Amino acid sequence: MPFLTDMLEQSQRRQAQDQALASENRADAPLVQAHLASQAALHSRYRFDIEAIMASLRAEILGQDQALHSVQDMLRVVRADLTDPRRPLYTALFLGPTGVGKTEIVRALARALHGDADAFCRIDMNTLSQEHYAAALTGAPPGYVGAKEGNTLFDQDKLDGSLGRPGIVLFDELEKASPQVVQALLNVLDNGLLTVASGERSYSFRNSLIFMTSNLAAREIQGYDQRRKGWLGWLLPSTAASRHRAVEKLVRARLLKAFAPEFVNRIDNIITFNWIERGLVEQLVALEVQRLNRRLEKHRCSLVATPQVLAHVARAGYDRQFGARALRRSVRQHLEVPLAEFLLEYHAPVMGEPPVVYAAHVAQGRIGFSRQ
Image 1: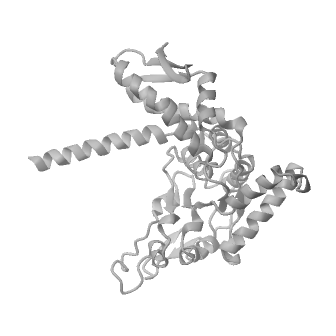
Image 2 (image 1 turned 60 degrees about the horizontal axis):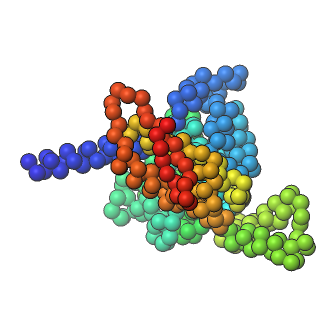
């Protein structure tokens, strides 16, 4: 019986983990229904509500107006079905510093489009740093074990999407992959097909939105900002538009050093993300509190954070160089840890009664909680 007991425990653990992920990743039901009720006069093979998607993205992605505008333009072209049927629907490369939302915008788009933040095919390119790892994308060569199956890291179901909505693919941290791995993507970006090395099967990306992220040029952007603050900063462009053009020039030069021109030339849109500015930090902390409340639903309680609490966490966690990840660490240290301590000692949920609402407050430099 120990074997059956272990199997039962594993099943219960998987079920609990799946429930936790579903709570964290799900979209609101009205958003999913909005796609089915889209009232656009033009009928095409795609059916989704662009305004509903963009409203969801703007609520989650702050301070990245250029990236959001490019996604909106892309959704319009795809919704109207004007894309070349022999290519991917859209390819974009997101560049910029760490922790500014390059990967998060793809997760938010998957949540808004498919109702699940994990409903996309994600390839972590930092795991493909060796030359022979190209087989993870192209399959085993003829004569090697597994060549007949043609298995790769791609999931064709996620590439295809569902219910009139396109699939989403993310190649994360592109610059960390070996050059041979990057070269394997040339045909994907050009004609939307990837035939495995053995020739046994092909993967189609022609119904996919392809996103790539990279931290390339982050140091150059940081150095440019530091020069602007120096005593010779007045010699550099002063208007926002001219600064943006200067940064784009730096990024393009760094990009062409890292990747072949024929690869860069196949990308539809290259977007540089902004640093997270101080004025947005408290709004980002409020978003983290919203996500925390989703996780608190299983305990039949919720948390209300005052502006003073948000400001306290924001002050402790703001680091321009490390972006939103530094804020998440601050939320963990200053909010989640004391909240966990409070719940373990005082919270006892009662089935059948309304969820309990707790208020967070700052006292003597530390966050405390009380029942409303």
